[in-house]
Length: 512
Image (cartoon, rainbow, N blue to C red; front, side, top):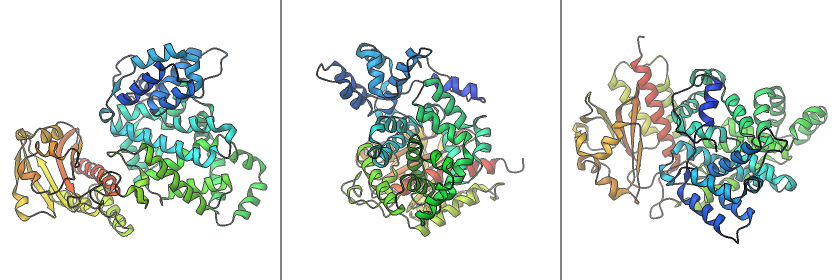
């Protein structure tokens, strides 16, 4: 089995270095999924299909089994196993069970959130693929299903070893609009697509996954042509005429393998916003591919997102279906109270403006007070009603309140000894985020200073530590009045924290 050794997580700077590192990462499997699969294998009544259905509930487990089966047939004339049922059949139940025993099985909450988030996006993509394409191309449903689930799998080990790099990439490429090629050269020393394609080939993943990466890397001219036609979604007859005039382009678009790329594009872009330009482009491409009106595409897209959330959503992760108006989702996480109202488009526009000020280079801030005021205002703009920004002293012995919003005036003079709270100690030791809910409120509240916890009445609170030059210098506490959070605002809180960290970094380098 690959991944048998503990992997050093020093940051590589070349394509070869990244491939070597990521190929040797052992992806953790949720303990509950691991136990279910073990029981299914030991049950004489379970068919291979039964076992595969249980196994695919853990994307990391499915990937590990397919890779193991393909590793044993590498170099032979045997075609790679492109789905889980074939992989289990090739390995046999005994070797499959031995593989399970070697995989790290841990409680789901102990698995890095960035990794779980990325795997949930893959599950969402699979739901979209099954909903949009599998019924229309029933003969190819296995190819569609497994290609969609495994398309992002080369990034899963990266989300485990270097989650901050992926967050930096998202912040700069998606939110700031910087060139992906330039950002990836700086962060990784290689294109992410090249790293992905090399791993896809090494792991012998489904051919449609390989074709998707090839398309994004080498067939951009065709993609741009099709995107231009797809933009004309209000005139389907004109679109069809343009495709008829270019039969080569029409054949290129109609390849069944494109379903895998479309499904992942829809799921990934939805993470940013349903109405973002990225999301609109993938919706238009899907509309053109299926010859389906855009309104129908959107309706089905939202329905499949809701279905995905029912099966895959987790309280501490962001699923874009939460941003949709679905009655079933209103009290999905906190049944006793309605979540805070989601921000309006005007609110979000104001918040983006605040974040742009924080991200400006060179830093526009003249002193630390100026910066923390902007940080506080950005946190309020993202939907937080009560905010407290605490700064650590040089020895990390004390935390002093630096800025507040929505709190009594006396809160501005508070100072908290760190040695009296294990939660504050943890937040100061490394970058972390703690979310208090009714399920864990009693546990965490007992570990926070009374003077801090008493400022935030209610059972819902976010605490996050912020880094500068690898050291925690600030902790932010925020809530939406003490009731359940709007999940959109929780996502915006995380993005705002990244913007504040970038502002701290730029501020510390001013004059250099």
